Length: 249
Image (tube, rainbow, N blue to C red):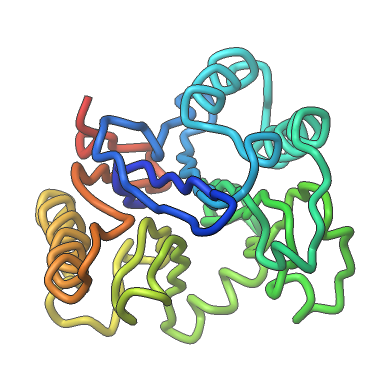
């Protein structure tokens, strides 16, 4: 999992709106040590405060509840319920993709094999669940199990990896994104000759480089400051646990 540490803001006035990016030290990527898992946060800068949280809220939630949960699913549901209490329902017409979300990734035992699994806990519509015929109420926060272990094992059996990304990567340039979570049996794209057989150390060097390169492309192609930026945090989650040496404290 990788994420930048910039914080985007938008001020909406009576005649125009103004966007700006604060390149401060926000912790959009965090570790849940008791569950050997990681979580990253995204928010929509134009949404009102009652429809968003920040990285400090997430830190406090993990400190209060992380050790008390025995599984990723328990943690995801607890987080969903807490967010439903403090985040106002949204108008889906205004925010079809939601105003905030959290990527939660870790390993579970499935069919006797330690397997990655992935939740996207957010408000707004869920294309992943809709593709499986699962209906949700998009106006509130839902703990969407986008990648349950049975689907992940099916992907891996075909030699495929799975990349989730979020952030302002559509409006800027096609290859830029604010954060990503990637699941594969080798942690990186198996079909990428540069990374398929990389060591953990090489992966920690390559992933931030990839995001920083996208940041620089954004900066050169846009007249205004891009909404993503340094420093880049990286964690590697394996069946053995979480390697968080890529987080810049």
